[in-house]
Image 1 (tube, rainbow, N blue to C red):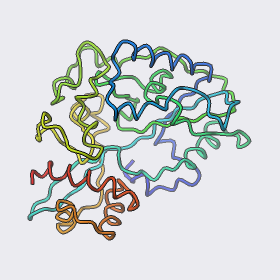
Image 2 (image 1 turned 90 degrees about the horizontal axis):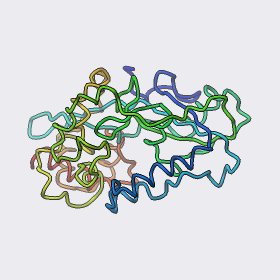
Image 3 (image 1 turned 90 degrees about the vertical axis):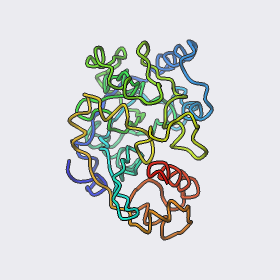
Amino acid sequence: MSARIWETDLENGIPESFYKYRVMSVKHLQELQGDFESVDADGKVSNNSVFRSYIQKQQHHLPDSLPDAKSVIVMAVFTPLMTVDFRHQGAIHEIMVPHYYEDGISEDHLKTTILNNIIRDNQYRVENGRMHVLLKRLAVRTGLGKYGRNNICYVEGMGSFLKLYAFFTDYEFDEDNWQEAEMMDSCKNCKVCLKQCPTGAISEDCFVIDVEKCIPLYNEVPGEIPDWIDSSSHNALMGCMRCQLPCPANSEVATQTQKLDSITEEETQMILDGISSDDLYQSLWEKLRMFIPEHAYYYFPVITRNLRVLLQT
């Protein structure tokens, strides 16, 4: 997988080496909702407003546009870790960019892949289910992935470097991959992620983490980062890789890390200074692939703040 995925021809679907999938009957949607409600009732789901905004719409129901859906397809697409070189004051600073970058895979590419390579029949309908199901739980409940102790979904051959998608279809599969949720066997006697988490978000007793202590909750949205998060804890342009990089389950896929295009000395300084520029926004989109110019009003301040912390300026 040496080629970056957006440099690959995707018109006829995503190459099989980039994705894995499982299917389940829609009859399990109520059980999925029950999973969430049970954990929530136990007080294990954070009431943080930002976190709740991520999950509040996922109520595990059929989409209005496809009320006769019979199956759910959950897909994991390999999303290798990227790094980018920021040139600043005569030095090169290599900074990690996790899955937040745009990989070039559109909803149409995913639907084409499903119809051509999974269902193998174009007469059926496929509707995006992202807003209707909790993707991580769906992936684990279908056996596509397993939980890590850090509450992240791991898929064989991809580790935790992936993006999850779900689609409803009126096609009825012969198989139904519904099963009990499982934690990776390798986690049972391993505490690497627990020890590496700088904020103590990961628990030894429960695989549900303390979301309010998790760095991405704060550094992927605008606003001030709380003072209780030490500046040395930050390690990526957005998100956090403290518990994932040292994880034994990621040892092989971590070697497939790829490079984004370098940010020049001038561009780095403009970011640090928070200077608005259409040319800069366009360049950052082409190089970082993290936000289109039209969304710079939201994401540029986030990148500016995070880069200042990473470069300690």
